[in-house]
Length: 113
Image 1 (cartoon, one colour):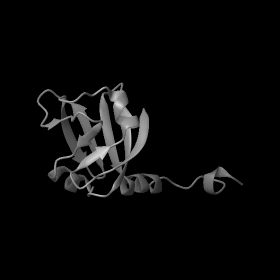
Image 2 (cartoon, rainbow, N blue to C red):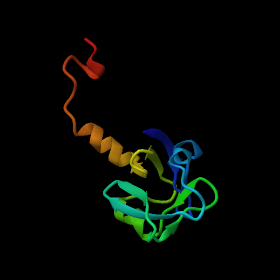
Image 3 (tube, rainbow, N blue to C red):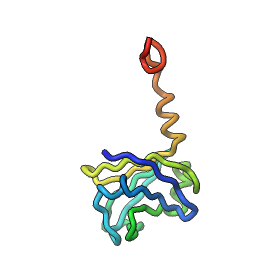
């Protein structure tokens, strides 16, 4: 896995060369994007409606960010899995909720006495 951070710009683009480049996606490759609460997933798909541009970023169609609670200007945690040939963009709100869903560590914060 390769992790990084990106920001959704006003055009729906999310860019982070360090995270996206290991996937080996090239300009013209087609992707399918799916969304759930707090996360967007991109995977190669010959029938996909999104085309990878010449630069290392992914364009999120306008309706998709609303579906997963993302907006222009939001920062996202990017997770690329070259072995699974996929990129995930997690909202910081979703990451925060996932961390809060776990009980505290015994012994105090961070497990320190």
